[in-house]
Image (cartoon, rainbow, N blue to C red):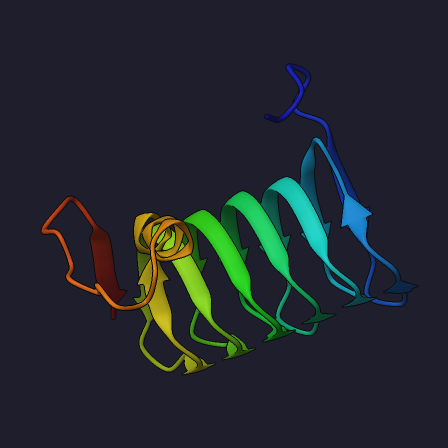
Length: 133
């Protein structure tokens, strides 16, 4: 999804954005975002805070997130504090990270949306979950 030139955008530590962000490029957030973020790839700095939904192909989170996360390839670093549900294809969590929410593979989320809650059987498939030390 990122442009061929490797373009990225940065939200500095002294910046607060109130509103949704949509970016077709990679995004680095060191400031505060009060709104939803949708981008190709997200890197979140340790001192940053996101209050809203995050949707991306990949993300490295190390700050605070209050909201749902829907990311194909997710890395949660030890300084991260997440309060919300997390949907992923592959997931790595460093020891020390704080997550208050539910984890579910993206495929399971799509399956739940497609059929009623009466049948919650889990088909055994390829899921990636790793704990980093």
